[in-house]
Amino acid sequence: AMLPEPTIEFYDLHPSMGDIRADVIAALSSSPKVLSPKYFYDQRGSQLFDQICELPEYYVTRTEIGLLEQHGEEIAGLIGKNAILLELGSGSSIKIRTLLNALKPKAYVALDISKEHLINAATLLAEDFDWLDVHAVCVDFSTPWQLPIPLEGKRTAFFPGSSIGNFTPDEAARILTQLGHLIGKGGDLLIGIDLKKDVSTLESAYNDAQGITAAFNKNLLSRLNRELDANFDLGAFHHESIWNDAESRIEMHLFSDTEQIVSVDGELFRFRAGESIHTENSYKYTVTDFSDLAASAGFKSVKVWLDDNQLFSIHLLRF
Ligand code: AVJ
Image (tube, rainbow, N blue to C red; front, side, top):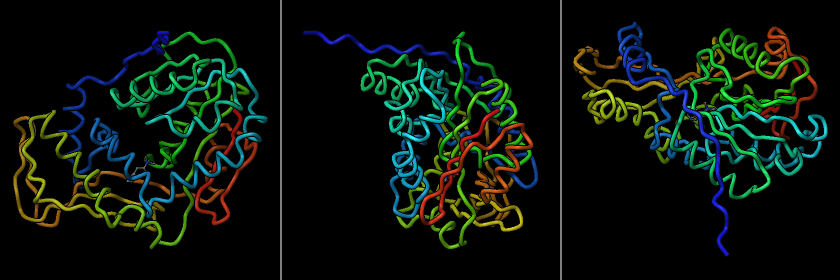
């Protein structure tokens, strides 16, 4: 017998290429030069990120999945069934699989900036959980946005991976407040937060021996070459991640090995030898620092789970 094709509802709120061009040109014109980490996630970048998640040095993903597997029943009990479940930065939608059978949500909405990857992941999920009402929204949630679907019911947001660590604490507080308004009074937010720890563990996690993180970082330049008609010489830049203790963050950089001029869609950018493009921040928190940040955005802490080695935390917050 023919199996019915799983279907998902897809909505595209992706920013236009013109907006991306203006943003990239401005970011490379600033001093020091920066690029937003949201541009890592083209299809190749999303694949490289999935490889990062498997690396021995990158403790983040496996520790979070371990926590979700260990405490999933308790988490689901605290959230309750039949919620509208929204996942921010759903990527390959792997982590949510640990919670779906216990949570039994009324609907699941995957939100991600990486369009093809999002559609593939949501379709695979709909195949494996045939009882689930699956929606996918391609969106850049670093700028104000609204849910384009009229879904009635109590909302729960799932924001795994410590992805909020890409934002400064001030920006993170603003995003949490926006999320609060999205889920409404009494809504739940389940969020993964990476913890401050020794510098060598952190720096190894972002400078892996196989060079996958370096390839992920440099893929940003390939993407600009392809999509914005730039001419970055990938061999003339090198990747390095550095712990910034004063800011409590890992910084990823691409350092220019020589003095060089790069063209991006007709605009010229001069690099000094040793000059960097700062491509990512990954802020690390203590449990109390993050709880305080969430409180400043109007959330109450329901419960926090940590692994035995205190590498990673999952916070259940209520707005
Ligand atoms: C997806 C933002 C959580 O900061 O750890 C992994 C991205 N960058 N290795 C992180 C990332 C380099 C990741 N987040």
